[in-house]
Image (cartoon, rainbow, N blue to C red; front, side, top):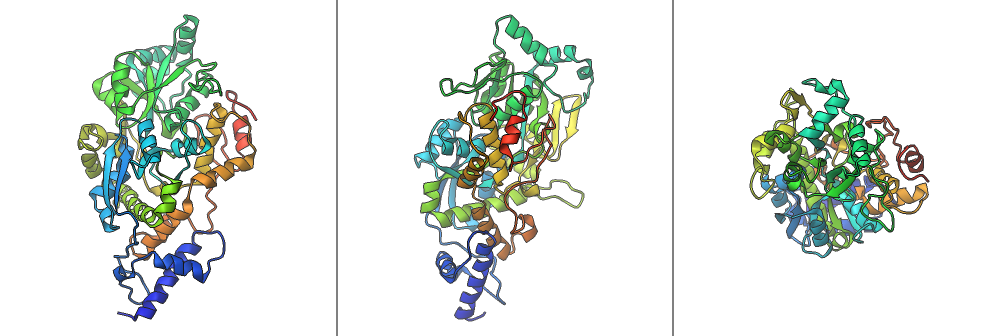
Length: 481
């Protein structure tokens, strides 16, 4: 064992690597000493200048309660608890199911919950003041992909009549909304509402179903300062339905289709009440889905606790995406079994494991391998990219939730206000120093937080987060700036 002085110097060297990896201003000795004071050095066993496997942050609040909604993408929170990753960080964590997204957000804001599994749009919407106003931040993206759009059997039959290629046992994917448009037009001509469900006004599901509809010329409606229902000029009426209630609401005929996460699309197939027609992987390949959110005030009050939480979540995401030599996801069946518990998602393991293990059932005749339907860690999925935040802001502006035109720099400034990659990188580098993560698992130190421009959308549009106004103006349907 090396001397206390050597241990201190090794610790300062480690912290320099961590802090310098975050970017920003020059790191001073005062910065290093301040950071070092937050770590319980009695838990370090530094040999030959390296940190041991047992480095603990001096957490300010060891007992925590997090909220979640019963969806499979709550998995990183559940796995961090069930596999002991929270325990490893000195945290006693309770995770509690919430009845809906609004209740979840309100309880985070008022302090009943320390943080939560959130829709990617919730920290953004709250911070810019759409709906409930509060400064919410995220330092961890829970997953990519994971949603689908399902229509009732009757609507699917009509879509097949409008497009004979859909009558195939295995129709070509992706399936656009083109064959749905004549049905929607008939409803409008008859003076009837064509109702579809999504889970929350700032949910990915809302923007994804709007994107899918608008790409085929179906207007999903605008939000205005006077009308916050989002139904102005709408061809399709989109309404909020909690995820677990989607199948029963479809079966009752209250809605004719919906966009939701798993396992509620697969549940429609199992119950024989609907047909998933597309996934959000086909709407936008590797799109951000959920995040872990806390208030900015909570982060300021408990910074070490937040770092410890992010460390545990990073390990959980990595475990979820671990693959064998043949590329098989080796831990997903265990994850499906854990998630099926009544305290978590509470759906049959056989329903959950379809999408979790890399298979998606559109129809009994149309079962497709989709290894990237749920992505929790690879492709830097857990990193909070500024560009992801900007995409959601562009859609909020496109549909009128942001009521006034804003300059391009406004989008970049809001992204930095809400997304906190510096916290993620600090936590990740601590794991690297502990031998629990490879440095290659995170973006390089010079990464600016912007994923490369992409056309991986169902309509082939180019999204460049550094040119948000051009992107907004590229759509035929939507607000223009």
